[in-house]
Each structure stands twice: as C-alpha cells, then as structure tokens.
Amino acid sequence: MTQGRITRREFVRDTAAGAAALVAGLSLVKVGNAEAADTSMIMNYNPDMEYRLCGKTGWMISAACLGGHWKRIVQIIGGQGIGDYGGNIARPDFQKNRYDVVSRCIERGINYIDACTHDEVLAYSQALRGRRDKMHLGWSWYENEARRGDRRTAEALLPTLEEGMKQAKEEYVDLWRITCCVDGSRGPDGKYIMTHTPAESEGIAAALDGAKKSGKARKTGVSSHDRVWLSYMIEKFPDQIDVVVTPYTAKSKVLEKDSFFDSVRKCNCGFFGIKPFASGSAFKGDSSPKSPQREEDDRIARLAIRHILCNPAITAPIPGMITQQQVDNVALAVKERRELDKAERAELERAMDRAWANLPPHYEWLKDWEYV
Image (cartoon, rainbow, N blue to C red; front, side, top):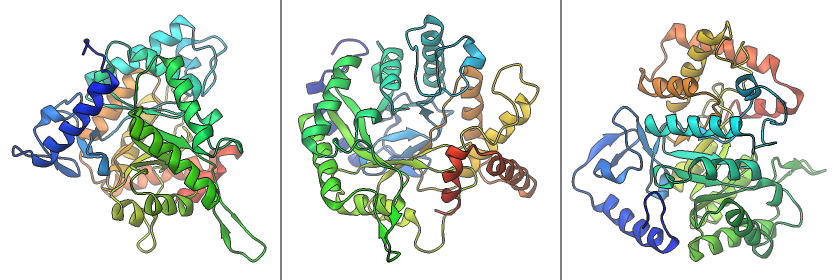
C-alpha cells in the first residue's frame, strides 16, 4: 500500500478483516446510535465528532457528511461556468474551493462524501487524491444510470461504473449507489405503480451484486424518491441494498404507523438524507460569507441538523457545503444538545414553513417528504 492509496486487493482483504474486528471488538465506546469497537476502526476519527453505525455496512460514519452538490458556489468564487451540479470544474479556483472544503471536513472528523453526478465524481476524486484513506466515497453517475431507459440491466450499468472509475482514476468505490427514477404513479384503477418494474429492479440489483463481487464496490445501494419502491428493494434484495440515499428535510417527521423507516430498521439499512435544508429554501441569505443573514442562517442550519439527528435510523444528513465555515457550523451542530427546546422548535418550524412557501417549482416534490 502506498501512502493515501489502497489497491483493490488490499481493500477487499482489509474490509473483511475490519468487519470481523468490529464485531469481535472488546474495547467498546458509545458513539452515536451504536456501540463501536476501538475507535481506530473508525475512518478519520475525531473525538469531537459523533459517529453512527451505517446499517449492515459495519462502517461508523460521521453524524453529518458532505453532499456532492455545490449550490451557490458562485457566491464564493465568482464568475461563470459552474452550475449547481457541474460545469467548468477545471477552474483552479473551483478546484481549490473543493480541496479546501474537503480538507476542513477531514479536520472535523467527517468521513463520507456523496457524489452523484459525473462532474461530482471527478471533482471529489481529485480533491481526495493522496488522502483517499480519510474518506468513504459514495458514487453515482446518474446521467448514465437507471434514470435512462436503456440503463436498467447489469450489462448496461456495470460499464458505466467502470468508465467512471477509469476517468476518475479510482481503483474502487466505497459505495456505489445507483441513482434511479424518482417517483411512482397511479394507474387508472388507483393502484400504485412503482417507479421501476420488477424486471428492471432485478437488473439494478444484479449490477450492484456484480460490482460488489468483483471488488469494484465495497458496498452498494440505490437512490430514489419513491418510498414504496425503496422499501421493496430493501426487503427484496438485502444483500445488494446496504444503503439508501433519499430526501429527509428539517420538516420531515417519522410516521407512527407504516413508516418507510420500518423497512430501513427491519433490514438494517444505512440511510443518507439529502436536502436537509430544502435545497437552501430554509435560509434568508445567499450563503456568502458577507451575507447580512449569515448568523441567522447558520443557526437555522444547526437546528435542522439537530432535528434530523433525533431520528436514530438516519446514518447522516449530507448537506452540500461551499465554505469551510459552513463545515465548521455543521460540525458544531453535531456537538450541540440534540433535543430542541420549545423555542428552538418554534424557530425551526417558522424557517421550514418559509422554506415550503419559497420552494422553486422543480422542488415542490419535497413536500411529499414531510411525513415519512
């Protein structure tokens, strides 16, 4: 093993050894939602960070992680050519921003990055170069995955992973979580139709199985907004669905009966929550360091993270962050008292009511995730 770089053979060997040690560990410490073995088993451990067991993966994951999107980054680096999900990622100032944000995440003990577009995969692979052993990297190239009608079989999906790895110069990915179609529908009889057919679902699971058995992916999972289909996948393919990635905002609440989290808990599945701040709609400012609303927005962000972490079935929320200060603020939220008091709950509710009122039309679907 060279410094900061692990070969596929080493990682397959070490994954098996690490999982055994985690189960058999005698020196236990209470960390987040699980008891973990010696903290040396936790990637990028920092005593000021909380860690949670990511379901059947056996990984201990920081209670807040880095989402792949870099929305509003032009407020920091200026100029043109960088959109919310991609763009001119060769810009030196963009690359420095991503490197610096990842560096601060490492300093704060954050140990998972979720990349879900081609540009995100390339940008974060580059930002992790030479320190790949500090972070679990979640991976999806959604433009060439199951949202395309011709990419719903193992034969079509596996080459996408391989091509992405080649372009990013990666020998393995920690988590391949295929981005799938978003929502189900209702037939003429009112019966719910899942976002993917059983045959398509089997093809997706077969691709994940092939990636795991080949050593290209340590763990596997899916991302969708269709809770019915996600529950089906979690229960139908427990060996392939280690993790799901799906929305969970600061306004989300767990249903007392027939909750999606019943399947998550039953199958011991890891869960990463996207859009914790409702795509930034919870904030008044523009996310720039000089924003007059920055202090208030920082406080809302911390309240949101604390609220989300009250659900023990969640591994971590994964907000996109564009400054080192935002990383510091999220890390502070993890350290603060978990339960919100009455005044804090009222403040967060006002912010999220404002977020619901200000959602752009293409994010109205987030309202479907108020009761989960």
